[in-house]
Length: 537
Image (cartoon, rainbow, N blue to C red):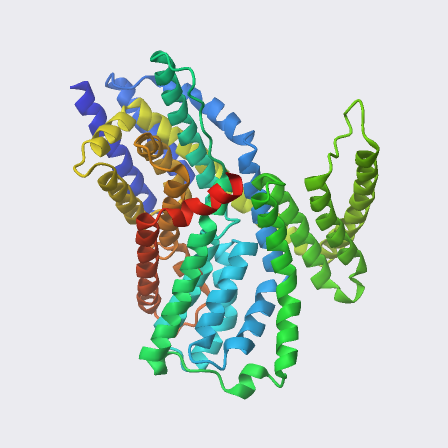
């Protein structure tokens, strides 16, 4: 009777939480509030131990001291700073000149710019709003199909959730790592219980997910562009080319290429510095996020006063040189004996740090003087606070769910499905996809992954592959009506003449493309696992 009652309360928790969320209550307080209510109900009925709730202060402390999650505010700062420095506007303008004269060229340029912004900013709202303000009027004015234009912008804007560095991958990587650690410890205890002391636990990191997401992310960009090309061939009237005079704006081909190179080089260098330092093993994702934040700050300082950019260029070179020096020279100064070569490297590193610090101070002064810094810090604080308060609410929700025996009920359900691992993964992916219609990626990650992650990983699934599958699935939550965030962002800046239903219809082909790409990665796991194995062994 008690077990049956616990299952009813578990199901009731999810149902009530979804109803309250649909009523418009804040996510974090909904998750925590519903959890507390059901904890009290379960305790009063004798099926819940309140000691589970006492673990929440430890969970909060663990979250606040989690080094991996420090990357979240750093990557947010990096993205918002780049968005304020007008990188997106210049990229869109020049890519439009390059591809605009082709049929479907504007849609292709939106996809390319979306991929570049994804790898540098990763902020979905900023990308969709910027492209909606700049590209959408141009596309509509030149006769683009409204649904195609809206779908292209929304889909390109969500690429920041799968192409690293991505906040989704940081949060998901932390949750997958915790789940995998739990499974490995259970396997180790089992092996020791059987007298096998040779078993050594394996680990998975956010860096593994960054490497694993690179090929599927680029594949998705290629599929978006391929769709634009196919539509341009099948329905030429839906995506006409720009007139040559309007596309080139009086510039020669050489001038266009030079302008593209000038605007493309800084973000590409930043992308290489951040991702390259992770993939080369020089820095952890958190350290790389710090590098990215400094690079974004320097780039913003340069954009605000390009005529006096020598200090910024010097600081950028110092930053790159420091990364290279760190890879080849031991710069620790706490050693008893320091060889002459290392001492020379330490002196050079100190000089490089002084050059970097001077450039940072100049950039800080420029962004402070123009009040850009105020806006960036406010946005960073708001987004980071939202992520962490939801994390705390979701932690309480999952604790109460476990206390009511929900994890065991889910385990028995998934293990009892016909078809084994394949059916279990399919059911979990289907549930996450359906939840994406109503919840965003943060709630799904913090609530669902801690429950199903250990169960699926215990079945023998590769943690990197599972993480990438979940990340690609979560990306669709930004596009699926009625609560997809990308749809709301575009609705906010789209002309009144565009109906909301046209935006909804426009994203459906791109949701289908995402599901196809998900099926491809499911069929060929090497797309997600090959690069992490090559890079990290």
